[in-house]
Length: 259
Image (tube, helix red, strand yellow):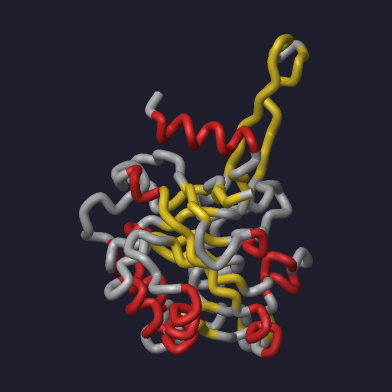
């Protein structure tokens, strides 16, 4: 093993580096995005026992599971959106594995989101953050901390009224700047999707999905514990299942931070 990798293992063993799990538990109560009734819904997570040290399997325990690709903390591949359908290496199984690892930049807009559930991260927000923490590097994950991971009640998490869901997201100009001028790997959010709850009413609709995936970028949703990450300095690992032609996948998102 190289000295560089030895140093990494030693730092993890000594506690100089820590691993933070940014993933929500996956269970039948895990929230799944709700679409208007004219669209096909995604099923929630279900689990059924095959055997558990019994006559069906005396020495082992295992289950079958059923879920949509975009359930719980999950990865959005470019092929997930119509704007990314013709790009090369756009499904889960052909994305270069190096794209699953990158530096994390965390922008905290909890205060703004407390005052406005529909808050959109603006270009000015991004430039202000960069003035303090440095330019978002190419190949980074841009993570938006909104406080939504603390909403354990599904009603508060979805925050739906007669006008639909009210959750924060990205202004279209910010998504475009991140995808092009900053060349990020993708964005991550604490909400159920990478677009704001009202994004279906925007013109164009769902601009973050359309922009990110149209530029071959990725999305991570339903993240948690972003409060344990520094604004910069963490390394993010988010590897989806290698589903052939998969549009996305549940994912275990891990961050390595200095202890």
